Image (cartoon, rainbow, N blue to C red):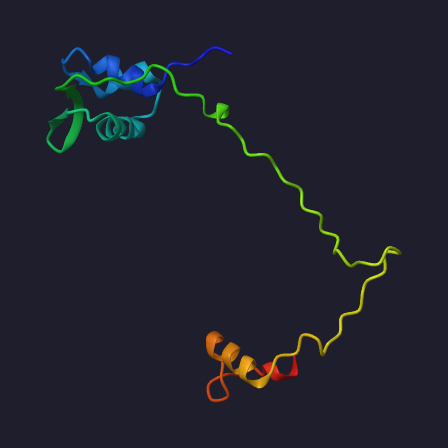
Length: 139
C-alpha cells in the first residue's frame, strides 16, 4: 500500500515560498472546496504554529502568506500499528448453576433488606414518604 501525502503537507509546501498564495490556487492544488480552505489554514496554525497572514479585499479573505518556517510531516503515522489489548471472554454461566440446565430459584428472604438499609436507599435515591410517588416497599 502506497503512502499518501497529507493535505497539510501539500498546503505547507505551497505556502513555504513566503509569497502570496490565492484561495483559488489552494483550491486547485489540494482539490478541496472553498469552505475547507479556512479549515486547513486553521489546522496549520494550531498544530504546527504557523504564522499565516490573511490578505483581504474588504472583509473577504482572498489570499494567504506564510511568515515563518514550519515542519509538517509528509505522511500520516499509521494508527493501525497500535498494540491491541487481548480480548478476554467472560463465562456468563453462574458457578452454582445446575448441570441439567434448569434455572435455580432464588430465595426471596435471603436478599431482604432491613428497614434502616431501605431508608438509606430511599435517601440516596432522593425518594421518601413525603415527596415520592414511588412505593418501593412492594417490590
